[in-house]
Length: 111
Image 1 (cartoon, one colour):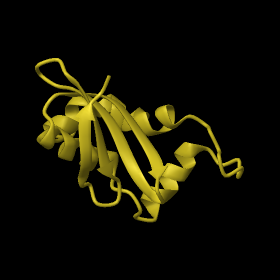
Image 2: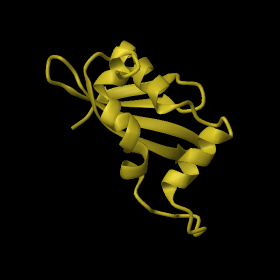
Image 3: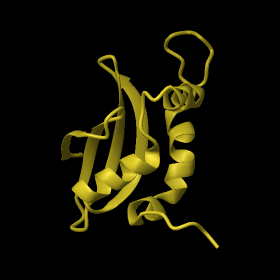
Image 4: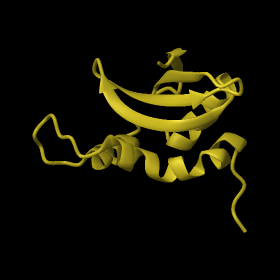
């Protein structure tokens, strides 16, 4: 029997398990040879980012639809989750979320 998760986390569960390591790739702009998924895991352990399941719940509540892509990036010195959402009416949105607080920073139609 699977544990009960919030609806958004259940719907995006495969992404919750794989999105960060798969979508971040292995780019290492700092030249430290540390993989991005290791950097993301370390940021989570240090409390610099909220768990992806929490972010999915926040975004789904703010922007109903299907979350189809997730990235965790450093922008302007802070961690930001970038999510792609397909709304019930078929629009594709890009949603930026402060990874430390879970606050939706902005959203826009994605071309």
